[in-house]
Amino acid sequence: MKYSIRRQFATIFCLLMMGTILLCWFINGTFLEKFYLNNKQKNMASAYQIINKASNEGSISSEAFDIEMQKICEKNNISFIILDTASRTLKTSTHDYENLSRRLLDNLFDRETMPIVSALESYDNYEMRITMEARTQTELLEMWGILDNGNLFLLLSPLESIRESVKLANRFLAYVGIGSAIFSSIIILWVSGKITRPIMELAKISERMKHLDFNARYAGKSKTEVAILGKNINELSGTLEKTISELKSANNELQKDIEKKNELDAMRREFLANVSHELKTPIALIQGYAEGLKEGISDDEESRDYYCEVIMDEASKMNNIVKKLLTLNQLEFGNEIITMERFDVVALIRNYLQSAELLCKQKNIKVIINNQSPLYVWADEVMVEEIFSNYFSNAMNHVMGEMVIDIKAETIGEVIRVTVFNTGNAIPEENLPYIWDKFYKVDKARTREYGGSGVGLSIVKAMMESLNQHYGVSNYDNGVAFWFELEKAGDYHESNK
Image: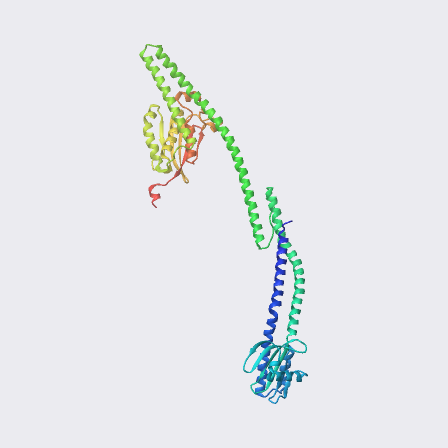
C-alpha cells in the first residue's frame, strides 16, 4: 500500500531513533569533555584530602597509603609528588620525579614562566588550573599547593586522555547508533507488521460488510485498542445485520400495508355497493308510496295512513342504517374517543332491561339474569351499553321456542364475562366466521322482517377491538349465546384493602 501504516510507523520510528542518536552524539561532543574535566577535578580534590590527612597523621610512608594512592593514580591517570620544606622528595608516583619536582618549584618560585591556559580553582592552600606542556604542547590538569604540615605537593593529569576518551566515546556511539538503527529498523518492521496485520484483517471485514456480508467476525484475543475496535466492528456488524433485517421486515410490512390499502379500497367499493343495496329498497318503497299518495291512488284515509306509516318506517330504517354506519366508520378509523372508567356492569344491564321490559312483554319473551350483586369493570360505559344493546336486540329478534333470553355476568380469572343467550335455532357452522362482517346476514328474509341492517355485530367487533378485549359466539342445542369480556376492577371493599 502506498500509504501503509506499517511503512509510516517504521519510517517515523527510524527517523526518531536517528534523531535521538544525533542528539546524543551532539551532547557528547559538547558536554562530555566538560563532564570528564569536572569529574577529574573532583578526583584530584579527593586525592589532595587523602594526602593532606596522611601527612598530618604521619602515615605518608605507610604501605596502606602507597596502595591507596596507587589505586587513585592508576584509576584516574594522575601523577603526584610530595616535597618537604627542604625541597626533598618524600613521595612520588612516577620515576620522572625530577621533572615533577622542578615543575612544582617553578609553580612556587617562578610562576610567570608557567604557560597557564585557564585557572579553575584557587584557595589558600592549593590551586587547580590547566597548563600547557612546553615540550609536547599538550594540556595538563594541574593541582599544586602546600599541605597543612608545610610540605609541598603536585597532582598532574594529562587532558589528552580525556579528549581521546571523548572522541572514542563519540565514535563508539556512532557505530552503536548505526548498528542499533539498522537492527531496530528490522525489529520495528516485524513489530509493525504484527500490529498492522489485525488492522488489515479489520479492513477486509469492513470490505465484506460494504457488500452486506455480515458473517465475518474479528477473532483477535488481545486487549489492545485494535482488539477494542474489532469488538466494536463485530457489534456494528451485528447491529447492521439486525437493522437491515428490520428494514427488510419493514419493507415487507410496507408491501403488506400496500396490499391492505388495496384491500381497503376494495372494501370501500364493496361498502358503497352494500350501502347502495341496503338503501335501494327503502328508498324505492318511500318513492313508490310517496308517488301513490301524490297521485291519489286511494282516497281511503286508512290506506293513506298505511302509506304514511310505510314511508316513516322505511325512513326510520334508513336513518338507523346511516347512524350505525357512521358509528362503525368512526370506530374503524380510530376516531372514537375511549373513556376508561370504573362502573358496575350488572347495574348497567339491569337499567337497560328495565327500558326494554315493555317490549319483551309484548313479544312474550322471558328474561333471566343470574347475577344480582355488583361486578365492577374498567371500560367505556357508553361502548359497553352499545355492545350489550346490540347483543340483546339480536337475541330478541332471533328468540324462538321457549322464548327465553338468559343473561349471565360472571367472574373468570381477571375478567368479567357477560353472556346473552337466546333459545332458538343455532347459527350454521359455515356462517359463524362471517357474522361479524358488515352487512352479512344469515337469514336475509328474517333480517328484513325485523328491520335489521347487518351492521350491529360489526359495531360490536370494532368496539371490542378498541377495548382490546375478547368476544365471541357459541352454538347450543337449544339456542345461541353471544359473549364479551371486560377487565375486572374489583368492588369497593377490595379496592380499599
